[in-house]
Every structure is written in structure tokens, then in C-alpha cells.
Length: 316
Ligand SMILES: NC(=O)c1ccc[n+]([C@@H]2O[C@H](COP(=O)([O-])OP(=O)(O)OC[C@H]3O[C@@H](n4cnc5c(N)ncnc54)[C@H](OP(=O)(O)O)[C@@H]3O)[C@@H](O)[C@H]2O)c1
Image 1 (cartoon, helix red, strand yellow):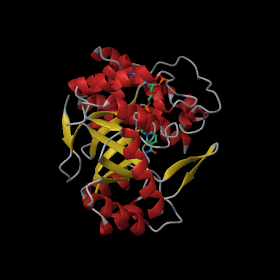
Image 2 (cartoon, helix red, strand yellow):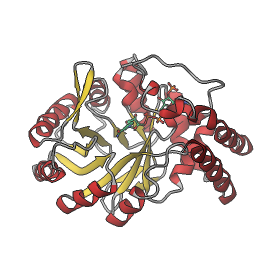
Image 3 (cartoon, helix red, strand yellow):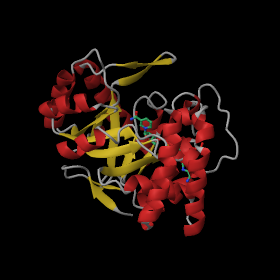
Image 4 (cartoon, protein in one colour):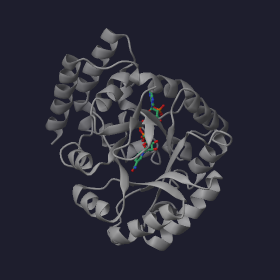
């Protein structure tokens, strides 16, 4: 496993880390808590040292699973969780109000049975709460020793500029893959300039970039892939076929899994500290964890770049 420093912070994280949205249990979810715990322990054994979770994943279920799994293995593991997105009835509510995130922090600490969160991230921007108020509260949490590093997620360049005026933000989490390059033009260069590390989510496009689908899968309504990742819908689904073909070609030539090709493309961007990847099985997690054992050649990168651009330009 390779490790990278997160921006200008002192955090050094594995280039592939473990996402836990799928542990939430809804729709897409991994129903078996025991398997999820085993996967986390195995991930730590193979060198993954960053585990990303959130209260919104299964209304606390994912955090509880993480907490149980890391008992006795806490040292050397970075636990990243989030605030500001809470389950309310059958929906979700965004609030980064200081009193709300304070309550959320205490709940996350208690669910995970720990006295500190290593990376505490604003999950989504909250247009109703000035970011300065949220981050002032997060700096207080940091001064109290309850959180080690401050992170943000899904922020645009304007919010990022405001955020660093108030707090020492270490990382920005954003959707990034060969199928979703929205953060590449503005957000990634700003992160680089401001000294923030980038953590990518949806790194495998929710699974599609593993190249495993022969035809478009149909998901249940409450499966996040039916509404969150747009490439499972037309027109992007059909237009991604050329890109998937190139990924598979390179994988065949290199005798490596297609998922490695997609993740290696992300990791060749120096702004990226770690690719967050979810997994339904231990086998998937292990496959993803060994991504950093090889790198794409310049020619392979050009082939991927042009296939990705073609697919995304056709959609715009
Ligand atoms: N900050 C945010 O707003 C935000 C948003 C989304 C996600 N996240 C975080 O980022 C993490 C990663 O994103 P994600 O889980 O949504 O998407 P992802 O990592 O792109 O896709 C994960 C899914 O792909 C499939 N998969 C993984 N490895 C595979 C392999 N080697 N071969 C074949 N299939 C494989 C598995 O699903 P199947 O087996 O069912 O195909 C797995 O659940 C999340 O878990 C979460 O921690 C954050």
C-alpha cells in the first residue's frame, strides 16, 4: 500500500481508502453486519488506514459498525465522519448550524465508542448557515481535542475560499472519476493552491467502472444508484460504453482488474490524497486495495482521457 500526505496537513493516508455508505443497509446496503466488520478489519490488515463514514449512512448504522470493528485497532487508523446531513423520517435534512453539528459530533463519538474523530467533514453545504459560523464551531471542537482535522465535502471554489479564512481545513471530499470530472477545472486547482488534499468519492462510479455490467442494471427505488449516480441512467449509460471498452482493453493488456485502471487514473492526479472506494465484499475491497501496485503508462492515460472526454462531451 502506498500513502500520501493530505494537503499540507500531517495526515498520511492510504491511496485507497474504505467508504462505508453501503453499510447503511438501505437499498444498496450490505445486510450483514458481521461481514462489514470483517471487511473493515481485513482492510486495516492490508494497509488501508482511512475509513470514511457518516451519520446519514443508515441513520447511524454505518458508524456503529465502524466503531465495533475498530475496537482494539484504533491507533494508526483515521476515522473520517461527517456532519450536517441527517436522516429525517424517510428523507434527509441539511443543517450545518453550530448547535446541530455539536449534537451530531457527540452522537458520532458515542456510536463509534471513541473520544476523537480524526477527520470531521461538513457533508454538504448548507445555504441557510453561514459557513463561518459552522467552521468557528469546528475549530472549537478541534481545540477541545474532539476532532483532529477539519474537512469539507461537495464545496465549490467560492465556499472553499471562505472556509480557509476561518479554519485550517485539511481536506475536500468530492465526486471524481472517469465518469464525473466536475471538480477538475476549478475545485482541484483551488484545493492545491490552498493546501487541501482531495478525497474522491464515487471513484468507481458506484461500481460501473469495474466493467462488470453487460447490460444496464435496474436498481430498487431506494438503492442510491437509482438516483445518486447519474451514469446508471440514459443518456450517460449508453455513452459510457466506449470508455468502459477502453478500460477493459487496458486491463486485459496489463492482466489487471478494470477497477485498477479506473482507480489508477484518479491517483495519477497529484491533488488526490486518497480514492474512497466502497465495497460489498472482502474480495472487492482487497482487489481495490492493491491498485497502487502499478501505474498507468502515459499512453494509457491519454487513451483513458480521450475516451472519458468523448463520453462526457457527448452528454453536455
Ligand atoms: N461526501 C459525499 O457526499 C459522498 C457521496 C457518496 C459517497 N461518499 C463516500 O465515498 C465512498 C465511495 O463511494 P461509493 O461507495 O458511493 O461508490 P464507489 O466506491 O464508486 O462504488 C462502490 C461499489 O462498487 C462496487 N464495487 C467496488 N469494488 C468493486 C470491484 N473491485 N469489482 C466490482 N465491483 C466493485 C460495489 O457495489 P456492488 O457490488 O453492489 O456493485 C461497491 O459498493 C462511499 O462509501 C462514502 O464513504 C461520500
